Every structure is written in structure tokens, then in C-alpha cells.
Image 1: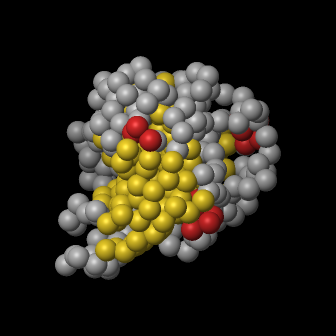
Image 2: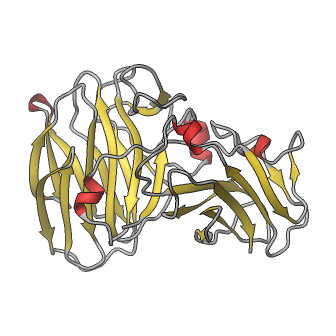
Length: 337
């Protein structure tokens, strides 16, 4: 079992989310917090956020995920449902889809679809947080999926009416509530690999943001945009495109490493189960390639895919490690290739 990618929404505006690679964001997709508006647990010491979406507005996450695996999210409608897909994946070749769709708002009914083929239905009461997921396979010309709500399966289906396999998918959500300020709330996403059982992917989990709290090391000469520390300009939450650390003349192997060494403090508990951790980086530049990386400080780094930063705007890169434990010091690295 392995987490491929994870995300918790924060206080970023739609403008900042666009800089972070999210598409479909607008002034009708806004960060929100407060009682009932966040998916959290009692001892969490910080402020959690959800993304609140007006009905029908679609937001797509930046990473291209594997064509076989599982995805999960936690969502809530505040007053009423609308006919939209609260969790879906879209193939990168033909835009074929697998989704959990609110098929009857009047009866609180959701349907699992494999590109139009019905897998099953489930009733999810308005006003509650619900944890939904599905396993999927779009890696061949026969697509398949099994759908879950709050840990229980509500159907599976296959659909073989295709000529192309998908080589990757993007995960997305739609506003399944009403108009703002009573839109649909989405807290997080988790994507798992094909080795993860359907039951594990369906088990409700919390995704929490961590803020690096110490500089670890650098190779090369890194200069913060202000102040004397790299965490002072790279560890901000929410993301701020105006603060950064940089190298004027980067060379292969140069890197900047920060750390989280107070995991239990930031989470408000020592977690008994940690499925994984994802490092998110955003960079710009010319004539270079780079990657994000993450590890438990006593273990080996897990490197993400190499990206080519764009000069005009920020380029997203991520890495996910499943070697994190509840007592880890976590190292987060950005390295030039």
C-alpha cells in the first residue's frame, strides 16, 4: 500500500491556487473555515480549511496520477445538494471519466459511474461530513471501478466500450452544494497506488498541513528573498508567491533542505497510523530541471518526478513518502538536476 499524492486545502485564494497549478478556480471557489466547515479532529491545534465551491463549479488538481489506483476525499453540503460530481477522475487521452455524482438531490442520492455505466447508489444525508472513495483502472480499454462511502462499498462496474487506454488521470471535484455562502465543502484528497486494497483506500483518514520549522542544510548558495532563513520564505502557510529562496547560478546536485521536527506538536497528537506525507514545491527559472523529495530523517529520500520550471510562472513538483511515522523528523528537499 502506498500513497501517491495527498493534499489538504488551506487559506489560499483562487488566485494563489491558480499559481499552484489548480485549474477551474475562481471567485466562486473560496477557502473557508469555522465550525462545521472543516474536516478535523478534536485535538488538532491549528486552523483547518476547506475549499467551498458554488454549485457546478469544477476544480481540477495539478498532478497527473497513475491510470490505476484509488482516490478519496471528504466533503459536506451545508444546506442542499445539486446535480454534480463531488469526486471524479478524468483520463488524459480521451477525457473519459469515473465519478461519484449526485443523481437525485431531493433524496440525497449519489451514483457511482464508470463513464456512464451505473455501478450503484448510496444515500448521504445533507449536513454531514462524508468520506468517499473509489478504486479505478483505466489502464486498458476496459475501465473498472468500485465505489465506497464512509467505508462501505456501494457498487462496482466495468465498461469496455473504448479504443484507448488512459496513461494518466487527473482528480477533480465539483460544487455539490448550493450558491455561496452555502456551497459544497471539500477538505482534502488522497491518491493511492494500485497496490492499495479497496478497503484501505476507503478507510477515512485526515490530511493535515505541516509547516517546516527549521533549516536543515543547503548545497550551493541559496539566498532568501528576505531575512536570514530558508524556512522564513518557503514555509509560509498559506502559499505566498512573493517569498522564496533562490540560486543565481544553480548547478546539478544543488539543493535546499528544511525539516519538520515537531510533528506531534503540529498535529496535536502522536498519530498511530501515518499513510504517507507529500512535499509540495513551486519554482520558476530558466535552463534547469529539478525535483522535490521527502524522507524520514533516518531513512532514504523518495524523489518526485523531474520538472522543468517555467520562467514566466511557477511550476509544481511534488514527492510522496510512505516511510513517515508518528515520531518522524521529516526532511523536505528541492534539488537541481
